[in-house]
Image (cartoon, rainbow, N blue to C red; front, side, top):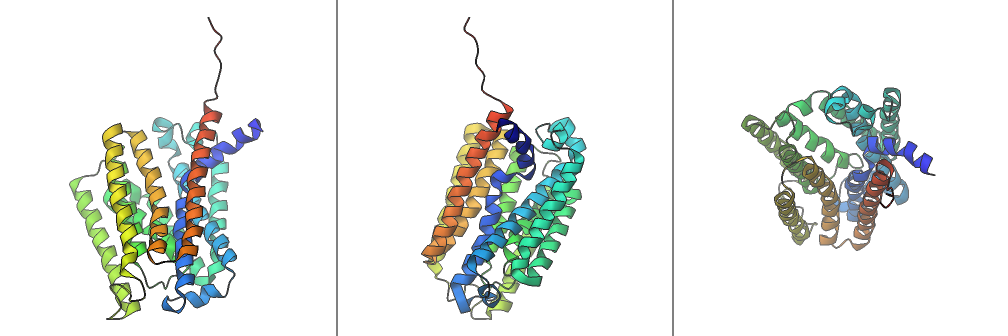
Length: 330
């Protein structure tokens, strides 16, 4: 058993499975929201023709595949640089060969496309577009912080459009876009990553965020009409209250963490982990606020299971890579 664990561990590291549940939660939210809102929400006819379990399974496969594709591709392309600065990466440390890494990239992309077939041709097309964006981000955009921050937010938020590209209520997607950009910026600054984020990069990222916000508003106008674009009448306004509370809680929590731990790679890693958890909590908050209790239980169960799984896997990694030993008494 120990030998199997040691063999599997590098590949789990490569795919960053400990935070992948957040990508699944974003996709599941779009599915559960669309099905629960019925005729109020666009695109429900496409999803209602499939069993809910199949949609959730396809959404999980698509989200996990795209997420793992992105992080595996990142490790493969950055192997040379990681050998100098990040020997904890499986490819850089030699625990995963380049050929195996390439196989992981190909396999995860196939999984993403296979999962998208549950949502029809448009789901597959958006998946391929996201895969192309992920390739562009890892190959070039991430080295230009101002552009990379915006592109990362668009990619993560874009996952939520795979099940239903016609969704009318776009503010949850906008929130994920904003959250991802803020978390990525904090991680970059706190982790002292290179190149550093300059004022120009902040301006470029702010302009990009503004453009994305304008696109969300324009799409909301087009899909909801002049009387129903800013906030659909069939969505209770108080559904935003739990989400706003979560936003405030995240800001306070991260601020305290940074003050307590100081800047550094470890703090940046924790910001990323809690940032992933909060994305799943946002989905639960929207569902609870709208009174969709059954759907919120489903997404809440995924969130709890994902968080527990992340904790167990991290302990597992620690035991495998730093096994507990015994010292003989002197």
